Length: 379
Image (cartoon, rainbow, N blue to C red; front, side, top):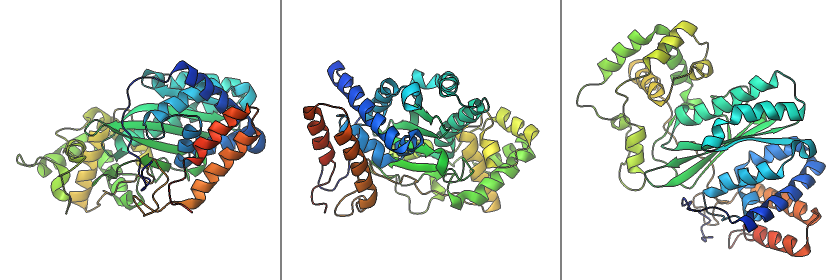
C-alpha cells in the first residue's frame, strides 16, 4: 500500500485459483456465522453497504487489496458461503449476465427466507431503481457491469454494484442500504460511493442541490415530448458540441478528460417514447419520472439542460464519490483517515476471526492481512 493510502484499481485479468476460492468461501462462512450470531443477519447486510467494511472483508478473505475484481469475487464468494436457511441471508445477481437473473434470484430468496409476498415487488423495485439511478441520474462516466442485492430475513437489503470507465480502465463501486434511503431513491440515496478518482464534473441529479432541477425536469416531462423537443432544439445551435461550455473553470486535460467529454456530450436526441409515456403517466415526482422504462441518461441530460438554461434551475456538477478504495491517507490525500470507521471495520472482523472455528494457521493469516490494512504511520 502506498504511504498516502490511495488505492489504484487496475482491471486485472484472469480468475481466482480454485484453491484460493475454496479457502475464501470457508473463511467467509466462518465470519458470517459469527457475525449473524452476534449481531443478526440485518446487521451483516448493513455492513456490506459500508464501503470500508466491504473492502476490509475482501482483504481479510485474501483477495488483492487494490483490484477492482474484489467486488465481483467477494460477491461470488458470499453467494457460495451464505446459506439462507442457516445465515438468514441471500445473495441475488452478480457480474454481467448473472445480474440479469436478479429478479428470479429475488423470487427464490423471498420464498426461502419466508418473507411476505409483497416483498417480491419491493425488492425488485429497489434493485431496478438502484441500477437506474447509477446509470442515468448519476452520470460519472462509469458503465455498470456488476449488480448484486443482499437481503436478510427481516427484509433489509443492500445493493453493491460496480461500473467501469473505459477511458482510463478504473472502477467505481456504489453501495446502497435500505435503512439509509430516507424514503427516496433519488435524493442522496447511497450509503457510500467508492472510487479511486474524483471526476472534474459529474451530472448528479441525486444531490440535494439538484432539487430545483429535479422539479423542473418533472414539470417539463409532464408538458409532453413536443414541448421538450422545441426547447431542446432552440438551445442547441449547430456549432454547440457539448455541455462542457456551461461549466466554468472545467479543465478537459489530464486523466479522465475523454471520459468527461463522452458522458457530458449534449444529447442529439432524447427518448421521445419514454417522454410520451411520462406525459401519459404525469409523474408526481422525480423518482416516478426516473422509474419510467426507457428514460435513460440522454433524456435525463436533456431535461436537466433545459431546466438549467430556460428556468435557471442548475443541477449539481459535483462528483458524489465519498470514499477512496483505501481508508484515506495519513497526509490527507485523498482525504484524512477516517479513524472511527477504519477501527470499527477492523475490530468487528478481528473479533469474528478470533472466534471462528478455524485452524490456528488460517486465523493467523487472516489477522495478518487485517493488520496490513492499517496505513503506514497511522496512530
